[in-house]
Amino acid sequence: MVEKITADRKKKSGKKIFIILCLILLVMILTLTQIPYQGIIQKKLKKAIEDHGIKVTSLNIESINNNTATISELELGDKPSLNITRIELAYRLQRLLTSGFDANTGINADATAIIVKSDPYTINADELKADMQGNNGTWKGTVAIPKLDIKDLEQDIPTLTVNSEMKFDREKLNADTVINDKTKEYSAEIISALLFNAPRSGNINIKHMQFPWGGGRIYADNVIISLAFDKPIKIGIHLENVELADTLGKVSDKIKGDGKISGVLPVIYYPDGTITLDDGVAAANSGGIINVSPTLMPGDNAQVAIARTALENFHYTSLKISVSSDKNNKSSINLAIEGKNPDAFGDRPVKLNVNLAGDIIPLIQQSLLPLEDFKKLMDIKETK
Image (cartoon, rainbow, N blue to C red; front, top):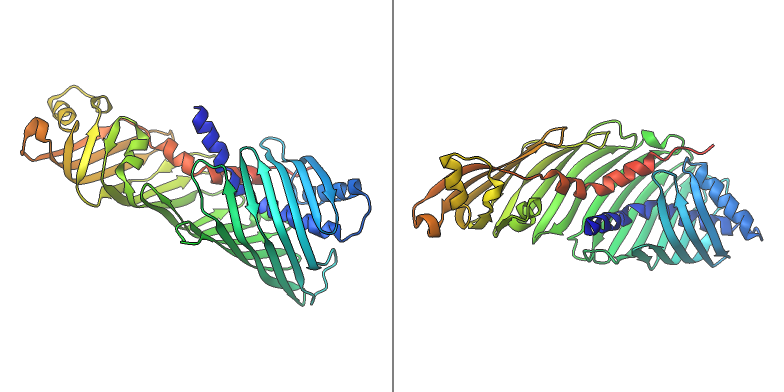
């Protein structure tokens, strides 16, 4: 249980990056106002955040000048809250307007070191570059982070690169953001549309997202997320050449096996946080061996007895897993399998179709934790 809680906390780190980058830009803007009093700058930053509907429970500017800034003890929201222990910045400002953007003036900013610490992880960005060109009240250009490292996670993530093509005016923002590592095993393309005065009316389209898992990869395409979170979100989770042990083995530690499987799990995420799985299917790419504990096959008839014996050391040539669930979090797992058990039945071919006890929903919920965290952030009420 402790390990699960720790893992859940660690998975939240990547979802805070957007808030962090916004804070970085706000701090850089405020340094140009040349206000000599740190406390006044702190109040201006707090008000700027709360003007966008996010409650600032705690915020402390330790130091700030034209080249460096340190923010600590940052807590956004009440229940739930977003906590960031420390943000350290070193930057070079070439040309950044503080207010009243000139309709034809560019925005150019460069942060040379960004460090974010929030127990138990650390986010490091060597550099952040923003280059926006104005034309009659509309600005467009790029925001880039050449090297982004997230440390102290259970799974090591390679250095990531973030590039965002942005276009905005005083009312709306559109962005096309690409995130990947050097090999592009970790990659995502995210299209965002946001109205500044009504952020919940915006939407995010995850055109593609993938990451390595179980010796293969998991990916999803064209996931549409309304920032109002008032509509079901459909997510087709694709498994490609993943180890059998990293799917069924995570549903129950009483299932052991080898071989690789591929398939699709059609997931629906509802506004109330409920998750359902609509007839997901995955099949083995080739033969292998599977061992299933007899305790996972309830029943007392002859067919179940044969299945219990056969699946203790089953050499399969064909394997298909079918999974589904309803809104009451009741899931079903069906295993259709062909092959033989040399210990129990020699070379005699065996064909089985059995239902297994187990629940795949917790595994799906774990993979969707970032989505739940983002929903909670959007649920933070405006402070008045």
